[in-house]
Image 1 (cartoon, rainbow, N blue to C red):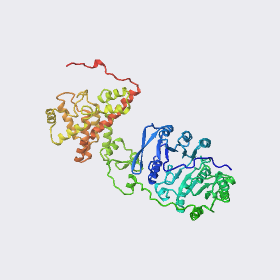
Image 2: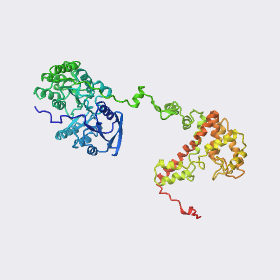
Image 3: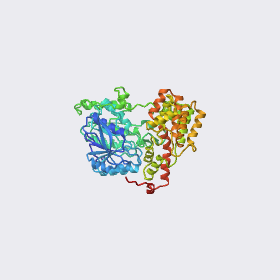
Image 4: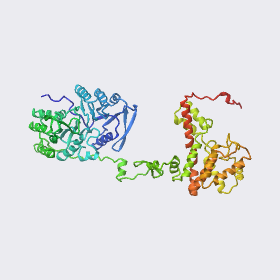
Length: 616
């Protein structure tokens, strides 16, 4: 018979490095944790290829206690040329793109082993990859594999599971057993069995469960035969396919001289009467008699392989063969135990287990996103929807930390409506329009307009509210209030308009006043602002109560009806009221930016005839 193709014998070592295709943080971190526990000098992950990213970036990970930066490239060619020592290509691409990326990896002279994690790679594509690998004297593990491991040296991705399982199965140091299986899940179980019945594995491979694996059970058994550190071989096959027969022939012909213990799972398939039954893996099918588990076990046993009577007896059979090798001196000294490095716990795990305490950097009292749904001041978002809360209700929860009565939240919404826009000529809208016509993005256009908000444009709500409240609370008459500010050289915030007059009142002020008269328990601060307006109109007919003064005074009335005095003072000092104008006017500014972009307006240049060119 022909021996398996002449694939590389030693796939891994303590110096082996890999290139990872498609960024997967958990498998990468598990590899690095294994490296640290095994006392490797260098991390096993040399680079990441992430086609959607641009070269030159990094992904952070931990190598023991040290945080490292793993370089990221956008092509396999660049990654392999930059990291020629990396011999293993771990492919986490989907089954749709695994063929192209694996083929490219096989074409790189530095890559020796290609691992294909994805399940369901088209069989035709897999056959092409196998042919290319054989021609180049390279080896493929997979598709549909979890990977493989050399104990104490190198592991692929999620092989062997968690770090706790690594310790439990003593995979941090090499043993004497070579193990190969089709199943990644059962491999993890067998690593535990082998740690209990022998001195552990030297190397373990899960070839994958697809019908056409890149390398077979026989390929790896043949490798194990030529690795001196491996003293016995354990094989876990399954029904379907004929790979186990090749192993039997190799043993029978004397090509495999080391003792082989094997079991083919799926003996229960004989209980099913259907002509073909699928068992998990694509390659695990019952049907033909010579692909059944019972037939394979029988042939293996007759060839000289140690085959137990049942899977339950598999562990004891392994123990028996191992003990005999020790007695006969084949295994002169079972591997002595070593003390592995203790992996530092990451912050999240240590906190969860109560081993450390950590001061927080941010305190939040208004929302919580840790559960199944966000909470606004303790209220689930689903309840917000069920109760048909409006934007005013959300503002009351997140800004004022209180669920205000509906008349109050409705007033907040009215303020947002009436202040949303005031045409293209006001300074904020003008700046937004100019920025949009300069070709800037929406956020830049919005910020340009928002930056004009201040004492002279829309930013006087807080000052108007504070000044009117302070004056009324201290019993200062409206005329005295105005004249005191005049002597200080200060404007009366909330009073005055560029185009509105006593004869042409701001309709927005009238609408807000009408709503307040119908719903507010008290309007004393608004009435005081009106009294101030009556006095200022004696000086000039455009010194009317403007939208800032109206909203500011009415919001003081609202807050005074819903909060205690210290809370009202705190809200005013925080600048929360100006936030209403910022939020509201953002709607209009975004509208102006989109309007200009929609019309594809050209770059704005101010006309020269509108500029006075003065000389000193």
